[in-house]
Amino acid sequence: MLISTPSLDRPGQPEHGTSAALAVIGLALAFVAAHTALAVDRYDFDSYVHGALAQSFLYALAVALLLWQRGCGSNLFLILVMAIILRGIAMTTEPGLTSDAYRYVWDGRLTLAGLSPYLHIPADGQLAAFRDPAVFPHINQRDTAFTIYPPAAQLVFAAGAWLDRIVGTGADAGHNGMKAIMALFEVATISALLVWLRTEGLPPERVLIYAWHPLPIWEFASQIHIDAAATTLLLLGVLAAVRSRQGLAGVLLALAALVKYFPVVLIPALWKRWDWRMPTAFIATAAILYSPHLITAGTKVVGFVANHLDNEGYKQGWGFHVVWFLREFRLGDPSGTTYAMVALAALGVLAFITLFARGSDEIRPGQLVALAAAFIWLTSSHYAWYFGWLIPLLVVYPHPAALLMTLTAAALHHTRPPGGPTWTALYMLVYWAPLLLFIALETWRIARHSHDRSN
Image (cartoon, rainbow, N blue to C red; front, side, top):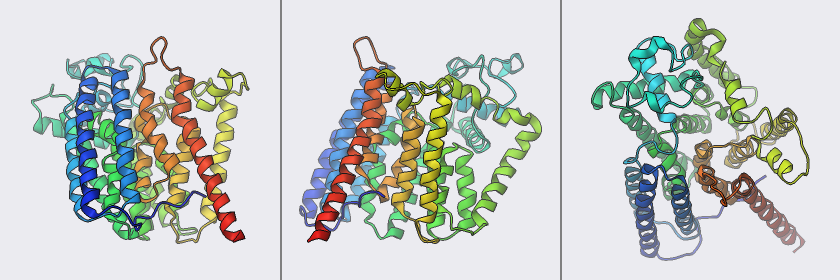
């Protein structure tokens, strides 16, 4: 389904040469990151995009060196140290790219106080005592929007708010606790990746593909998006499935899905067919987490999701990059509903093929990447951090087209000033360029395979 990954057992530069080159690239990444951090603190979106894309170029050089040269054990220490340095630089910034972190803190504080964030908008007069100058003024849609985050996410928010009370400076400390929680999730993700690489018999240096990637550095460590937690839980679920722990995998995948819903798309690649431990554990975990909120808030636990989708333009159609592209070039004008049905059907076909085109116990990393990348592409994620959960899967199966899509996602932060790139240009960069690369690579692979067979 996807091209094979490069082998790390190729002849290449001597070990000291590889380490020296990685060290130079790492230092360059740190230099660019320091300047990018200044752009974040200045709320300079365009300069941030330029810095992130410059980091992406340097990162691509490091990945190419890692995959095509002979690795050495000494590189792992360098990779991990540089991962800490890059995240340390990013963590010095305020959440200047988005305001999501302030909603997290707000929800967490309500939960700790025994109030439901599903029942009250932040501007509700009953919550006046919770308003403070550090958090409340920065909450997006505070006058209209109930929370959209599922129950497991609310537990993470509560943990962050509690930790902020411990390590912060009181009720107005802000997001320090949340930043610490997301940093812990990053540590857990990198640790889990090292375990997965060992399980697959792959060199641990491949963890660089996640550890140095600009997207989790900025969106998780800096902007503290909750996707960091979903990514960790998803990866732990994958590890459990790889080790044939279907029940545990079901629990972890449910936790991941109740932070952000997207991990459910990988279930066809992880489920051992007709083994009911995973679906049973998944449903039971979801029921346990949702039950208290259903009792207190009823259908309001998912009530604002429809409004959110409308706000993102999915109902009208322009929120889907394919529909936007067709309309922009006057190639068609499908409704949002029509496109959504076609996209859902395409994902359903891919899920069916994935489930039945492998051995019952077999887990193919390439299929995980295919499902995740297809979901992101078809659903037209509008935000760079929505691409983050794909990156750990690329550590084991580093497909160039999927990797390119995660690297160009930073462009979605562009403010599109007069004379600047239009959304069409951004969609071409983020979505269509990776698709064209995928088609070119698959065409080349098929042609090479046919040539080899003919000889």
